[in-house]
Image (cartoon, rainbow, N blue to C red; front, top):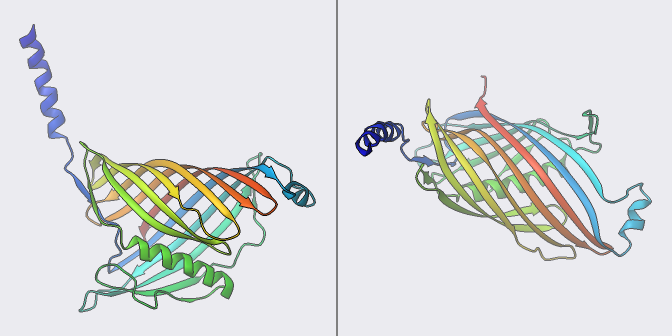
Length: 288
């Protein structure tokens, strides 16, 4: 009987070994000679509660606000990333164009209403030169289009994100063991402060098919406490999957869900924000 079991199990082991995927390197650095469009959708359900009231309830009640307050925001945005050929020293030009960026409130009926007061970002263009290591040369970004205030706010965020993303080292993922990755970033909060963010991510290779690696991602976010009059404490967790084009070294699609809690201590009270977000991103070649 034992011999029969061994004969039955051995072919299954051999089949599993034959189909085990080789480790894959994930490398997110900017590259020359690319023209891509990234379409992103972010749905965020946020619930606001007052933990300590020092006048915030009365102040906001004057505007018809009562707590707890829940709102469902949908952000849709499209960007075009274009990079030119590499120069002799390995550097290359890069252009980021904002094709569209819209935010709306989703009602209980499912209907969406455009949010008022959205900045004019369509047709905004940012240009930079990327060095051989994938870092932005100074001055980091030259911008044009849109209104000046919105352009400068978005410019500071993009500069910070791109400069820090260039320092993320490639990692190798496999089916046998999750690859740990720690990323430290500064998230600019316009009008408040720059928030330190530490992301500890666990990446595991699930499968490889047709040149695409399916990668499972699980992450924990830890935020620092910014200096200034508004004290913010935040933490979050999330996870999802990514389809990574091995030959092109490009994330073709990413789907993640994130849970975050933010506690803000403002002069007239302490507010808690519980956020449940779902993000999808798909990248495709631009039509020329």
